[in-house]
Amino acid sequence: MLKECHLLMLQSSESEIIGFLFIYSDNPNAHIGYLLAEQYWGKGLAFELLHGFIDLAYTHPQWHKLIAGVDKSNTASVKLLNKLSFIQQDEVINDMLFYEFDLRKEPFGEE
Image (cartoon, rainbow, N blue to C red; front, side, top):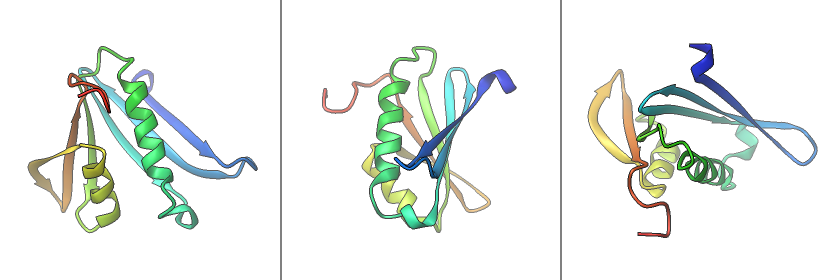
């Protein structure tokens, strides 16, 4: 399991830890989660982080989809996932919504 998990750390230019991106590879999918320090919310950093990761994910042909779970009360993350073209799935477990991004489709801006 450790071979399939990755933790990416996001740092400021002053080397302050801003947040994390978690990736669990479950071929053919990658399950992702992210955290940002509260003082960095609303500044577009989560968008930049996930957008950059999506671009990187296209270089991993073994992944077909990115899957993200988010608490339905986390409206900022719900909006972010929608903005990044993640599709909400029908399944809801313990107030968690699940979103998928299909990597088999054309990358951003190339549709």
